Each structure stands twice: as C-alpha cells, then as structure tokens.
Length: 190
Image (tube, rainbow, N blue to C red; front, side, top):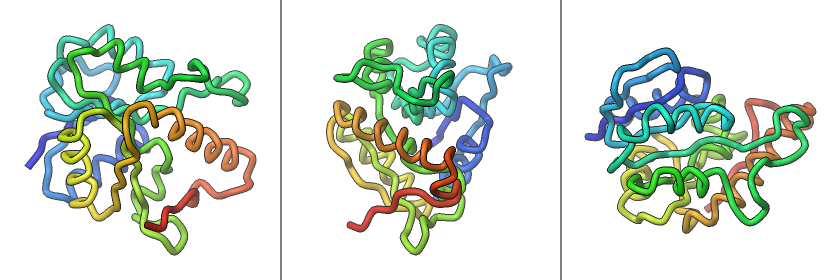
C-alpha cells in the first residue's frame, strides 16, 4: 500500500484522490494554505503551472527522495495560445531540474477530471500516460492507477513529457473552444 500526498484541492486533485483510494491506498490533500508537512512517498503537484515555483520554494526539502508527479500543462494563461516552456523542453523537465533529489514523473495531464472520475473516455477506458526516467517510480504509479480501475501506459523517458504537454494543451484548447466536451478527450486503444 502506498501513501500519496496531493498538493492541491481542485477537481483534478479530487479525481486523483478517488483513484488512489479506490485502489486501497491512502491519500492526503494539502491546499495552498496548509503548512502540514508532506508525508506521502508519492507527491502529486495538482496545481496550475504558475504555482509550481511557489510550491517548490516552500516544500523542496520535503520533496527530496520522493516520487513527484507533475500533472501540469504549462499554458500561457493570458493568451491560451501557447506553452510557456522552451520548445525542446517541458514543465516536467524544469521541475526535475529544480528537484534533483526527487524522482519526477509526468502523468494525468492528458486526461480531464471527469474522465478520471468516470473511468471512461467515450466507450474507452481512461488511460493515464506516464513519462519518467525512473522505472521503479513509473511502475509504482502505474500500479496505483491500475488498482484504481484505470489503464496506465509507460510513455517513455521524461523527455517525452514535452509531447504529453502538447497533447494536453491541444485537448484543453479543444474543450475551451467547445469542440470537445470536458467529459471527453483523447482515448487510447492499446
């Protein structure tokens, strides 16, 4: 059994929390006003990308030695028309550079909260794509996702986070422009 700390309390945090507990694991949700120490072996950053630097500044020592899961999509929230990370990088890689003593994964950013909660994207089961450089960390998160009733696919090394963030960005812009539903999104047949 794993213990997961989720930094954030919004829709995605709630949906991920439900998946964690469905699989028999324990979870704690910590809001931005909560100074309680992180106790999970896995820590999910369920905050908007602009808040990540503040979280790292406040909790970097608590994140050392832990699996840190970045779910952000680094959108330019002013224009909603581009990503704010270098074209050859990703938010997850930036986070990994700032947390050299953590095992950083990218996951959950290509799904909406509704599809995590329902376990379905249209007629397909919800699939969580996971990128990272630590095979044990990916296996641990994959196990939690699968125990919670969803599919998990290893998307490769952390450098694949760039493609996951581009896919997440596309999905968000399609939903924001009402071309797809917030209860829909991309499905994976594997």
